Image (cartoon, rainbow, N blue to C red; front, side, top):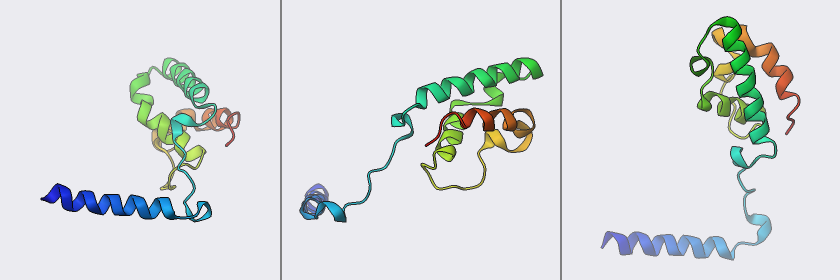
Length: 110
């Protein structure tokens, strides 16, 4: 059956990987939420977004979603391939927040 065929392939691949020496293994991937300071940085960005949204009469959810904040932190800590600038520091959002976000992110080095 399909499951047996693919199951055997998977078991074979796992066995090969387990037989590799430690130095042949790739570096473990870093997860954004496991980064030291993630929660603190996220909260600081949320607070900044609330401040900017109030002063410019723009909805906080429109200004910065959770996805956009995580995109910024992934970019800042270079956890994912860099494909241009994050949405929070480009376009109309950059006009409102880029300078403040840049200063804030300096408090959270890699």
